[in-house]
Image 1: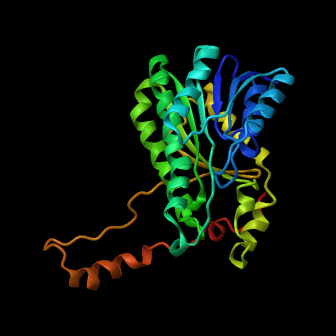
Image 2: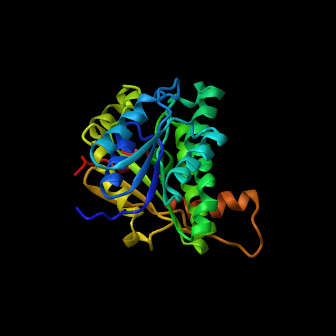
Length: 303
């Protein structure tokens, strides 16, 4: 196998299992030195267990690769900076950050508690910022770097009982785009992937009638299917790819659209409430988006 990542140093957060562990193992098999980060908490963000990250790092080392384990919380600023420093202390550089760590606390919106909102935002969005920000000065100094962030169709499209998760993951897409703009001049790229895979997080989704078909489809998709495209984005051959939102769905790779104006109306006289109701909204109404959920858009079985 070609060693496409020889000499590269890669951090993968949430790499103690499922999608993250597959990314870490595949990157290592292509020659990367990998820091396997995982707090070892539950899918809801509770508890901690160092064994998850250590097991993956040990497996990589036993198979001839090079890896270190890290047990910090990405939601903690100091832990995030220590994670990046660990890579620098061990190997003198950092080339890739994969922001994969995440948690779910699904609750219908009118029952959602503040702690459910705050914890999901802290891990999924602030955690992505923390690790990215810790790496950014080093990427700038060396004139290169690659961010891959995990977003979700729960934010890009929408899903039931995931206001907290959807908002955080749509925020990740915005974060990635603005990082790409700010750091383009330094040779740094930033992309997002919305992964479709059955993981322990997805397994926590309530088994309701509304979710039955969604879960049936997702259960057909293994987390190992995500890693090849993620690793491809780390390579020199993908150095021109930045500011994009992709999806990986079993054997399908999707490029998502990004918000752009699709129709406009104007008046020389300026708008009033009455003219908005009489003219503007009727003109725009045929182009309005339907109230869709992710399964409504991705409604075919994975290929």
